[in-house]
Length: 69
Length: 141
Image 1 (cartoon, chains in turn blue, cyan):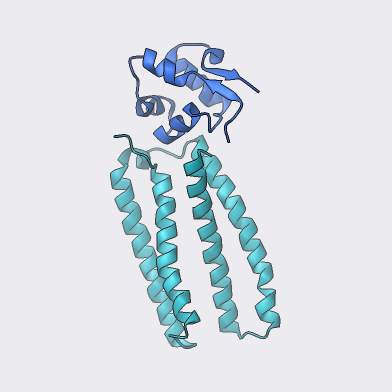
Image 2: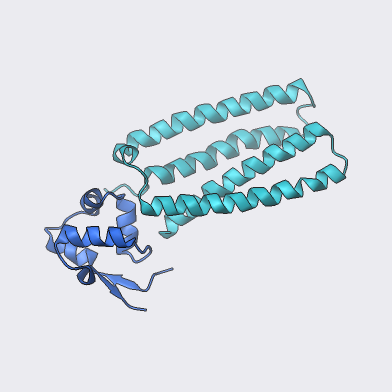
């Protein structure tokens, strides 16, 4: 079931020079499959993981995740 | 091509396959009456448990070789959540099956049969844990 949180990870990866899911996963200490699940909206990451993702792209948390519920 | 399965999902598949093959053979032989009570059954159990351990070690090592990076990193938060949920489900299944052990006891089954029922409970609970993990890995969570 999709979670009511949209994310811009795919776009941010593209803008970061087509960063791969594996590369992002390595930088936040997760598996590629977990990054894929987050990106597909199937899994809501913890607050810490969300901040880590935002930090990788150098943007604010709300630029990565948006509440759609 | 990106790896579609993480090491932990592969490990869950290994558990399903090894449990079905090894303990399926053990309980299948008992159900079909191919072994009789006593030493013969015990020898078969030792053989099946040994095969189970050997297959688990071998197949998990092979899985780790195909995903070496996963093997060196601890479970991430999603994998920890999947593990916690599947173990919780397995606990309730095991508890229910242990309570259900009262049925063969009241039907007058001898102690060796009851021990096999207890072993079956553990095997089924383990299978439920592994299948639940695979389902959650496939669904995302």
